[in-house]
Length: 215
Image (cartoon, rainbow, N blue to C red; front, side, top):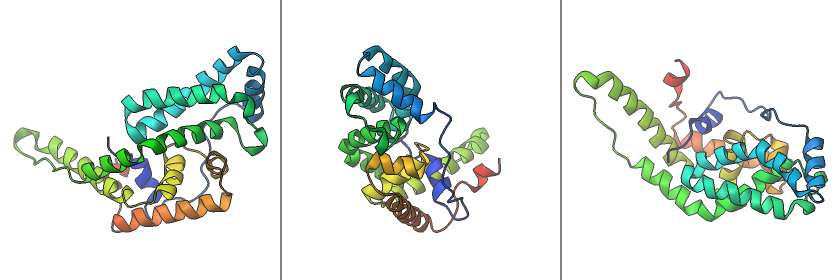
């Protein structure tokens, strides 16, 4: 498992701090209505599953790998189904609620995630040689970026890292992150700011994705 360059893009100098725009999904009121109806008609929950399972699975996979994502994403929706009657639309939208459940499950694997980043940071780089020199050189650049970013992410505190991950990988808005984690909007901003600062400082205020952006 290697860190996603979307994290570096969010954290590096000159990158936008504007509140992200949520991916196109159903209207929050529609999701809430479906979830409420599913308490009486369980089959209605299939609509929520079909709509959000790919997003949640992708998020978990980008953090922990595909094998774990299969189990954790499934468990997320099993918990959501069992707790669907307890969802309160006043505390946030369904998508944020689902990511909150997934985040709680990911916390069980927090140490494994950090160990994986530290292991990535220690990986040796391949050396270019022969007719494959150009291709290997590109591979070296990509692996060097992953190593730098992995080392940086391992230094971010767990609470701050959750916010960074939900914004950069989950593409949640700040309001959605606040609802998912049960924290204030201002806390989301401060945690994200700290995470960005740690990553920038760890990367030496350089942009390891510069060549990639210029492609």
